[in-house]
Image (cartoon, rainbow, N blue to C red; front, side, top):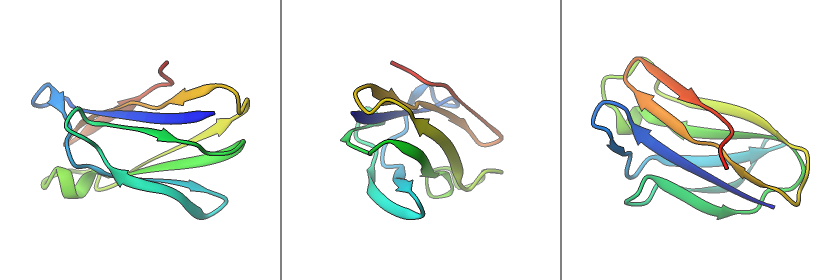
Length: 99
């Protein structure tokens, strides 16, 4: 099983570079890092269960209503790939399960 994310800046239409991201499971941080030059993090390998991916959007967008975005999701099948993109702007965000 693997996990990846892709953060896109909806204002600039470009990847969000350098966003701090952490993955939590059962209250513990299991992975952390920053988005690369393409706004991506990949290669994390969480186990089955409920996870939280936390994006430090406040350090990326100075004047944002959402200083942190938390997305909670369930890893049901550890053999699958889980991709959770984030489309970000100062006053809105959206996400979905990607491929």
